[in-house]
Length: 196
Picture (cartoon, rainbow, N blue to C red):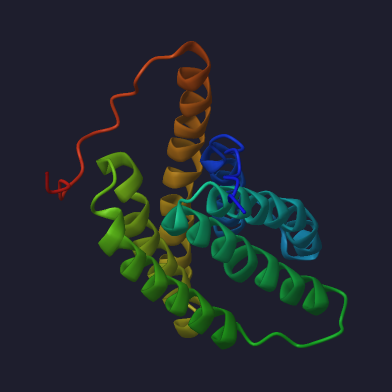
């Protein structure tokens, strides 16, 4: 029997990047003190749809054959957004006492994941690759701020969170618009070019 190939669903990376950008903006604003501790449950509520968007974008991207971006979006949605959102919500309603050291270690683990994902991303356009070192910096500073209880590192992480939150949000919109009108975006050459 002849195997039928599935039709691609379209580029889901902008969908996933939208969730990623919203998460970065929320985490940045929280670190900078714009979300008061008494309203921290709001962060958890907002992160659940963001995690769904990231995970869905990852699954569609995987289905289209892009393993790297699909795994990164889906894992980011579940590990970085959904898991901590549930923990934060449980702590906010008094179900658990959430030690900041655990969330700090979680951030450091995710920084290590982003460093590893940066290796294959070095073949992507520079704008896409920049996600990796940027997130390594922000996750490391955020994790250390929790472990060391440093308000200075928390503020640094907050400001650095805003960079991908705003920059890649514009990139996601530009990818959608450029695909709709058939133009190529100048997103930079890859660091490592594919061999011919």
